[in-house]
Amino acid sequence: MKKMFRSIDEVLRSGITSNLAGAGASGIDRILKSTRLEDKLYADLRVDDQVLDEVEATCTAKLSSFPSLSRDVYQGFYSLSVRRNDEGALSDIAKRFNSHILDSIMNGDEYPTIKSVCEGRQLPAYDAAVEFISNISDNLDDLLKEAGGDKGALNTLEKLARQEESLMQELDGLLKDRASQGNDPALDRKIVEKANRAASKSQQVEAVGRQVCENLMKNQESISGIVGQATQAAVGKAEETMQALAAWGDDCSDASPAQMALNRDVVDRVRKSPTLAEVARHLGRFREIAAKARKNSYAYGRGEKYTLELGNDLSRVLTSELSMLAYPATVPLFLRKYQNKRLHQYKRREAVYKGIGDIIMCLDESGSTKEDAPWGKAVALALLDAAMIGGRKFALVHFATGADARPTCSFPAGTISTTCSPQQRLFWTVAPTL
Image (cartoon, rainbow, N blue to C red; front, top):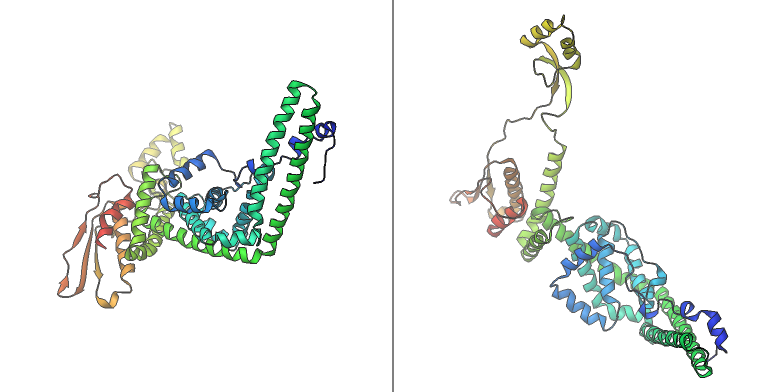
């Protein structure tokens, strides 16, 4: 071993405890920054997730930073502003391996798609992260081999980093003893010896770290393929969750834990039923169209002014007409125009009430409509949703032939009253009959 230090003066001048320690094994494994609120949301979602518990328990034995990788993947999918921790604060494993996996995700073709689905949405982001991590865990051995090579450089790097950290702690303790005890030739020799061992170990960590980086770059195509497949699976899972939430869930961007639990129940129920999943695929889109139409409608009463008319509605009279009240001589003229409904006033677009009544729908469920049955059920549920919002009654008649018509299934508006959101009331009342 080549000696870097030959005397205690060289050790003290070098500032070895700050120059050689680095992050080492004691550095943080988290690549991405997160707020306390984001950590709390993730912790709430993480409770009682036995699937992810088993995956992390298995993979942590192979890669100590694996739980942090799970957390970073969720953060990368969910966060509105993805920020990285300082590279100098990262552990060697996180810096060499975790960071490379995250870069492969964020530079992949599927990342914009998954961000559009998951950004700011807790459940879709979490489900996507779990799906991604599950796929990565199945291929973790291959990824570690690609990074470490046949000799397992990644495992060697982790062991060397721990040894380096231990040596640096011992060296720091010896330097503190020297500061309190004063000059002691025997202690100085121990310090020089320990400093040389720590410096040598640091050089080994750096050399193995370079080897890992070279392996990762050499096998970039293979690693990107594994990460890409996992990301595609995550996109599919996130879209399934969003379809279920759009159909029967509640907006999960700022939902309470109780509401989040209800959303989770809805998603799980939909996943277990092919019929509900197919209906949700159509219903979510129908509800989105209806919601946008309601948002784009005019706020009648204070809505759009589009022309002038004659009348005596003082709330809409032009200010030029009201100015006649300012002069005693013109007050009689104003009163005459008011009595004859001849005041100039604004005309606003008015709500159209024609045709807005109760809804009766007949749903053909004969054999010839089997392929279109989910679409028909989605239309029925979308109309029921509109009826509930408008305070109207809704009735559904199931029929297949003239002799096979089930009694009318009626859902009077306002009769479904639970603590759920309106969409979830719809789900828990109607979904069991599908």
